[in-house]
Image (tube, rainbow, N blue to C red; front, side, top):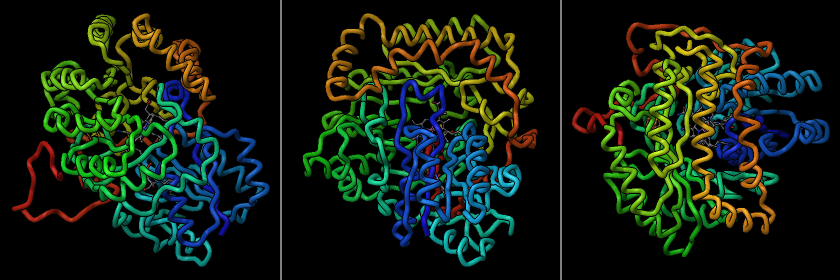
Length: 503
Ligand code: B12
Ligand code: SF4
């Protein structure tokens, strides 16, 4: 079949700092191609709608798949589906991805016939049987698929992460993927899933708290095939298993591969396995994202982060010693008042790290979707991007946004302040000489994008598509109820320690 796969536009508030290749969609594309289909990909993060329209006309796809890792992209995806169906009623339209997996039936109903199926869970094992059923019938029997025939059998987990390798060759304008000064930047996946269980996060519920690793040889071979000099490692928590990180490092050393890397990890993992991170700095590890989330023990307990403020501060020191630039995330609770914002600003100014703020947002698939006692003030998908408040704020909403933007602006000025300006200019000059302009644009865009009036105006837009109403519970739901993928329970004698369950 002729299959067109689409990634929706970048979310406005994150586009400033980064824009990365859609690895999941590239892997689905590879699985479809391996099954004999003719596949094209349009990534609207870097290509315009006119490119999509031209593909719909000239390629005339028999199947159109749209990636929905982000709730905020759902209205755009439904609109694309509607237009494609209206132009070509025979085209089989399907959605898949992280966020849509948790609300598949709801989205299918909202699309009113414009979407034929939603894939829950991993796309690689589902896409070939799905396309076969689209042609020959029997959608109701495909694992992980929800359609007018109902919900099919439970989704299947991919046997091995080593295959299929992402179809990077199908992407256009790869030079537009970047993260900060790592411009251009490719992405790679070494592990999948997370064994922790933070209350605000759906990374662990999607994979049923399973955790899988690629083989070091396959990972190094894939790295060798990447042309970009910079690579973002997409794992939720990098190097949980030090021998795995070491194994990949050894394979890269043998091949003499050196790039600049950006990864995400946890403070306790960094403190437990400093040698592996140190080894990676010699291979080019430059940046690390640490989801600190809160600066006090109370906040960390609330999010069930299972680390202490002391661990977090020790991890920052360890990273500084290794010469790794750290970006920290803190979750802004809508209950914050001016004083709280002031304390956070003070903290952020006192550390050399880059500090990002995201607004606490209950998502389907997380525990807090069910337990957050505050009622949602909106169910507009577009506002569920962790830059908007979707539960009542203690400060009047406008004042909340002014404090948020003020804090973000202070942090941005610090990050790009005098101390860094000279360094930034050097990087800028080198990038511009190579024709890379993403980092330069990022430097000038902040004021236009982060703006309280704009955030208020976002709340006043007419709403066509809304999230389902959360089913509130007094206590957290049973974990299995949240899982997309489930795995058989390990025998009792092999059950691991609770803080890193499943590793
Ligand atoms: C890497 C990552 C990023 C990267 C890359 C994003 C990109 N362009 O793909 C960066 C750092 C840029 C990023 C940014 C953001 N992210 Co992010 N990100 C992740 C992370 C950690 C891994 C995603 C990944 O690449 N996995 C590896 C690939 C192979 O898997 P995958 O993408 O899930 O794809 C598989 C399936 O989903 C499915 N699938 C995917 N697409 C399709 C399409 C079809 C047709 C089918 C059939 C199947 C299918 O099959 C794939 C293969 O199995 C996830 C957490 C997680 N573990 O999923 C969060 C996550 C997806 N991000 C999240 C958020 C909130 C954000 C931001 C909004 C944060 C912010 N404010 O800045 C931004 C928005 C980015 C944007 N679109 O503009 C949330 C999503 C929340 C939600 N419910 O909407 C997640 C779940 C994290 C979390 N803890 O809650 N992110
Ligand atoms: S450690 Fe990170 S990825 Fe894992 S559950 Fe917590 S926030 Fe999510």
